[in-house]
Length: 310
Image 1: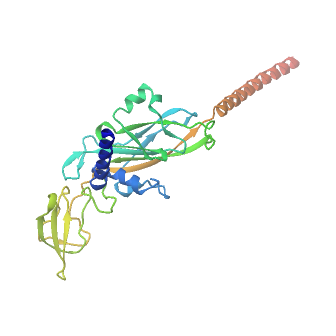
Image 2 (image 1 turned 180 degrees about the vertical axis):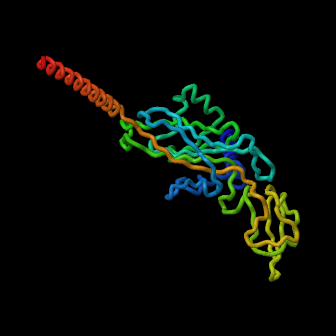
Image 3 (image 1 turned 90 degrees about the horizontal axis):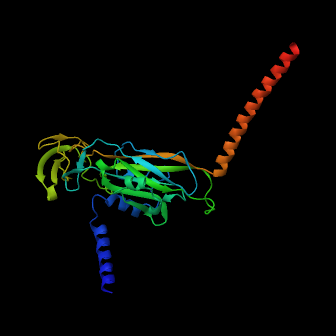
């Protein structure tokens, strides 16, 4: 009974810590899962791009076709320059982290570990996979992970079997993939993170630059009509301005500290029927045999014509 009570209390504490003070490294995936039932919008954009505004290349490799009830690999490549560091939530330099999302067709899912071969076990060591939600086992998330060791993330996928699932048909299916490097530029609440460039919201002259709370900087800007505003820049971005500078509305106050970015790519895979493969082989064999018979018939006719000519 005591163990059950301790487990219950621990679950409550963990839940509260997630809601009140989510870790900067995994807060974005958590809130995306909470706020979006489907991570792919009607336009085709993955919702990760709503917070990770910068764009970078993402690549994916999957087989052209797979059989039913077969384990195959989807390799997501997230390239970036080795040794790159980003701005952490506290403003310090931290190693770049990566993450990925794979949206599979209905019926496809993460392969159970008892069906992973030794090669897959080696390639996925240290990688933890999670479903986007309880009812969407075809959407798989990974990350954040140390970027230098995970520029390529292998997803072991199990294809469905139309013989046991009447909702599945053999044919071509689409796969949507997203790959991310680094923290986002916008929080889910719409506020900028310290991994973004900060700009002035009004024109005027900088009258004061003072240290703020938690390493932030307060910049006071006075407009021509005497109205003053205070821009707060969190710890991390480098200031580009000084007291006495004249600014236009929208002028940058800091450098752009972001070194990461998000990219998405779509690909296709064919769930292949064994009967169709066998039928195709028989067709090719029939075509080849027909060609051979035509050549033999042509030679026979040529021999008869040559004999009659003699």
